[in-house]
Image (tube, helix red, strand yellow):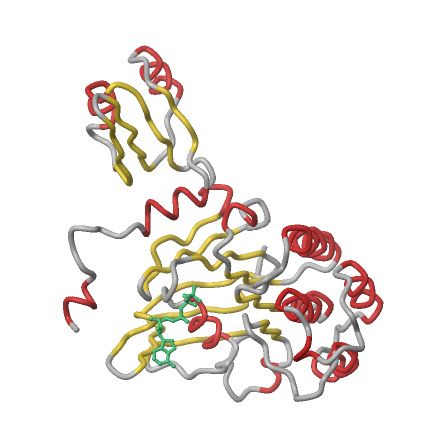
Length: 301
Ligand SMILES: Nc1ncnc2c1ncn2[C@@H]1O[C@H](COP(=O)(O)OP(=O)(O)OP(=O)(O)O)[C@@H](O)[C@H]1O
């Protein structure tokens, strides 16, 4: 039995006349790794700032650990938010950050932080403003991991981190999560890289939730059917189509939903090729722009 650690109902955030988060409902369960995904400007950072009490909602209900997060110190001390471009006091070095961290995070593991510093080859005694972009991201990633906060938010945490460092992050996150389960919310555009890490996916588009589903269910929940156009069209005619491409007499159509054995046999008989759709491909299909039309908000503006 899992417990709900955050819940939003009709949660809305406006910036002037622009609605960045539009009456969303969702819950976060204890000890799960969530992917908060979506295109630029979708509203991911805004949702994380609402959850961590940095912003007040304009409407709706929001509870984190049973209370409105803003101004409740007992909630805020259980949260860790790692922003894309974290700011630190002038003249701070990484060593200062890690020394101060236990004042904010009661579960802080100094030995784990030390190991991560070695993994990321982070210079401890260099001014933070002199660090490279990737080294600056490493400081945030280390704080996020070693804080072991019951609810940890990583908002695009790895700007500038090289591929090796990103994989160290994923590996350490999974290892440590296995030993110290907690709720983790990760926002990223590198969906393929984190696809296997995520347990649950929340997909945001223009301030609304497009998908809120167990990652296992999402994986393999869509299929691309490719082959001769007439056969593809016949096979996909009665199904929910989420993407379509074609060239000459060939077509490739992505459909939502799983295919059963009989359908797979029928596809084979029609000479069609079936391929599972990756999480990234699915998200591209679901959030791809309708090039023919503008968005509702743009029309209204
Ligand atoms: N302080 C603000 N004033 C006005 N508009 C804002 C403000 N902060 C964010 N927005 C707008 O709200 C929308 C959501 O922004 P948000 O930062 O939450 O998106 P995001 O999904 O995190 O995007 P990205 O992936 O690019 O980081 C965007 O259109 C953004 O321009």
